[in-house]
Structures are given as structure tokens and as C-alpha cells.
Length: 327
Image (cartoon, rainbow, N blue to C red):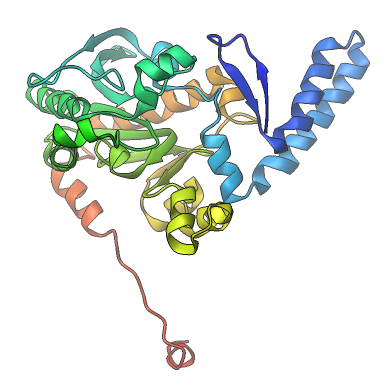
């Protein structure tokens, strides 16, 4: 894995191994003075994208979901919403910069927004705690879900976190109960809710704001109960087997849609959302518009939401001497 300086908020751009040739072609296109050569290179670039991205392994998709240049929650909200008014504090202990909440306008409709902000620059990552919320963040999110219910506003949550903060101070402030209460609030909120998985949706830290009527996930995002590296350590005592763990965990959007964990996969622009944040934002805006149309049609309700999550967790055990009879 390589890095290079980027003009995007002072961040260092990560170059993944399977992206290297694509970036070389993009650099050649930018530096070429010949229109004929540019057209030829653009065709080669498109052909390379069509060859590389549909065939990414589960671990390569994990790397893409964690890409340093991948758009964050605030990159999307600034492009999609008007009149964003951020609300702070959990009314108990304090505020948490990793969890962003507020009221916004989407194409003339008022919505409540809740989500994790990982940060882009080193300074912002530290101040946002890399998107890992403390109990204050989950209590703040819960407060906003309740407010949305009182105001009869739909809630849109943006999931982008490796996990909830694992520090001792978070445990001292009630991290486990805060997450459990947030999940319960998601299930019980009597107003339509939508979750969009932007990049990395990890563990209970993601689930706390993602138990929603409609869950959409970007094509190269991941949604997983345990990081592949940690899973490899637990199962095989070998972190180098993380690619095997990623495949076994079924972390990709296509897998999760097949399993019924998510409702929709949002296609990303060529090369991933970090290559064209504006196009990715437009895809997300289209999905939000679809969700709000369902709100107007009365499609979402609390009973349907509960049944949706109660149906999850079904599995089948296959016995060697029974397979042939079943077939």
C-alpha cells in the first residue's frame, strides 16, 4: 500500500495495490497534450475499471471501504441537504464530536439527520475520535430519534464507524447500556427511519443507529459485526488470514442484500465513491428521495420494522447423511 499527498483537506491519499495502474492512467490523461492520446487512455482506463472492480475480493472491498479519501458523512450532507442545523449534547454528560446530529432540508422536506463522522485530516480524525462514538454520542442520537418522533420527522442516519469507542472511560460512562438503549429506540421510534452505510459499518457502534425501516448500503462499503483482522485472530490465531475471515464474514453489500440484512445496494461511480464524491452524493440523494416517497405513501411503520428484524438470524444445519434425502 502506498501513499501520496492530496489536496483534499490536507489528507494523505492512500493508494491501494489494485488502484495503482488506474491512478497511473489518470495521471497520464491529465498530463497528455494530445486529444487523440487522451481518448485512447480514457478507453483503456474504463476497460481497466470494468476489469478490476467487479472482481474485487472481500478483503479488497474492506480496504476500499476504509479508503482514506472515501467521502464522510459531512461530505454528503453538504452536497445533499440545505439549511443543516446541527444539534449538540446528550443532556446528561456532554457532547460527542464523533456523532453528528441535527435538522436539515432535503428538496423542501424537513428531516432529522444522525450519523458518525470519521474525519479526513489528521486533526479532524483525532477530534472526531475516528468516528468511534462515546456513550454521550449514542445518548445524543437517541435524544434526536425521540425529538423526530415528537416532531413527526423522518430520520436519516449515516453509518460510518469501525466500532464504538472501546476505551475504559467509555465503559465507565455506560457504553453497553447506551448502545442497547439506542438500538431499542431505533426499533420503537414511531416515525419512518432510514440508514445509509457509507463506508465502514462496524459492530454495535454501527448497529446502534442502523436498526431502521430502510437500510441502503454503498456498493463498496462493508457492514460487519467484527473486523476481519480480529476475527482471524480469534478463529485462527493468525491476523494474516484476514482475507479468509473477510470472505467468511460475508461483509459485502451484495452478500448482505442476499441475506436480507440490507434493503438496497447503492452503485458507486467508477473506481469507488472517493474517485467522484459528487456522483456518489447524487446516488445517495436518489435513494433518500425513494425513501421519502415511501414515507408519503405510508409504506413504513413500526410493526413492519419489528417483523423485518425478527426474521433475521435464521440458519440451517446440514447433516451429511440427510443432504441426499433433502434434495
